[in-house]
Length: 92
Image 1 (cartoon, rainbow, N blue to C red):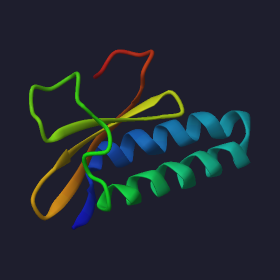
Image 2 (cartoon, rainbow, N blue to C red; image 1 turned 30 degrees about the vertical axis):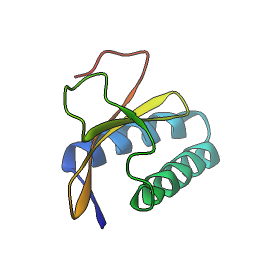
Image 3 (cartoon, rainbow, N blue to C red; image 1 turned 30 degrees about the horizontal axis):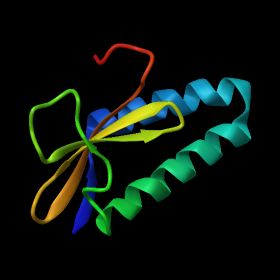
Image 4 (cartoon, one colour; image 1 turned 180 degrees about the vertical axis):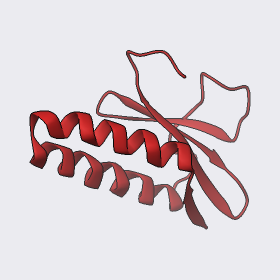
């Protein structure tokens, strides 16, 4: 199983990292590294996280990480990382 990061997810992660970087560069780097580590672990346990509260699909999941929600979809041969956003802000 492979992990595919959508362009939307990449753009949102870049924006979040840039926002964190304004305060502290090392915190931004650590956030991105730890998030990617959690995402890479999805290969072993793709259904580890809760069913998405934003979608009515069993294969779409919400991973909560440091106050952010990562929404991903499970397919037979891949996991697609769809979006990442702050839980306190509305979904775009």
